[in-house]
Length: 282
Image 1: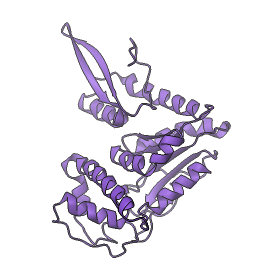
Image 2 (image 1 turned 90 degrees about the vertical axis):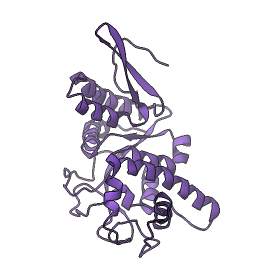
Image 3 (image 1 turned 60 degrees about the horizontal axis):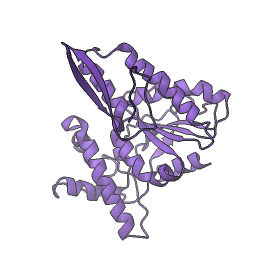
């Protein structure tokens, strides 16, 4: 437990726990609590709902302190490594796929609450990391959205800083990790970048067998259109204010773990995850 009289910014290495802020209101002390598992996204949502009643320097100071914290963590004798992603559902998948690296290589998964926030953090880290060699690495991953993101070269100026976006390239084969300045614009999110067999099994469980689609390419990605021919899947993951993404992710990792335990000869780790592992380990 840490107690302070001032707000000193975000502590990104803490992934489990709560932050409580005391606020005096009409001679009463009220608490505002934030779950540190998805801290940045929660703060972004709360600031919007509060109509900016939360102090303006709250988010700003968090961003600058976050950049400093990450940068100095990369230079430790036992350095941290980071995967920066958009939201909590991505964090759930990455914590599953990178469980060994989290235990052995000080890997931390940080959801930023949106694509623009991931790119912003990458931009802030680019200058200091291009000027100084670090032992730890930072890997930023975003979706390819309908609205094209900022075009950024794949060369960050540092061998320890990466930013890539997911793309299925209008195919049911593999999911690619593209530089942000790549001309491909095919909309792809993490739910369309998973193992087809595990995805299909998870969907059947989540819908009590009401969903009965089969993948055209069982060894390919999980593209809703190209592999499952299902126009309604995108709406399913947008339902319930996006909470379906989180509940599906939690069930998916359970199913994935069972696949790996029950079928030793079946590899359900997506190829793009292996590519990320190689870049973080090299």
